[in-house]
Amino acid sequence: MRTRRSHGRRFTAALLLALLAAGPAFGFSVPHRGEAAPGFDLPRLHGGRLSLASLRGKPVYLTFFASWCAPCNAEAPSIAQLDRRFRRKGLVTLGVDEDESAAKAGSFAKKYALPFDVVLDDDGTMGQSYGAVGLPVHVFVDRAGKISTYRLGEMSAAEIEDAIRKIVAAR
Image 1 (tube, rainbow, N blue to C red):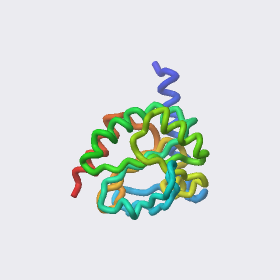
Image 2: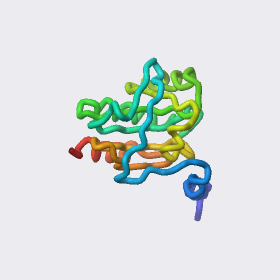
Image 3: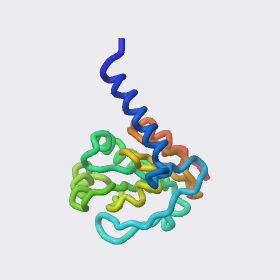
């Protein structure tokens, strides 16, 4: 017997696949494992700017979110906890707020006591280059600046931890 939940998951998966297939027509492209991560230079929530080039040689976890995104809200506490745990091993976690005001991004960061930098992709340009046709999006970049794992959609804490371990361990 199928439940509403299984129908909902199938619909969500089908919708995400359709969006990914149509992405190039709308200027979105999905980075693939082993490819160089697209560069960016964005304003930080609390001032200054941050670029991918400034993080060269470090394992980077990009988590794309918005305050209205239910899965983003559900994942935030686990992401904050994992960042605290893996920071001493060199991990740089970066929250990328998509198409929202600094006030909304700041409220989200404060609500979950995010211990990592948040940048503002207020025009969606970075989201387009990282295939953010929906939220959340998780991108794990190794020390060489290459995509290790890309995921459109919600991830469990265990899945996030596994992806982090891969980029932290790789030399």
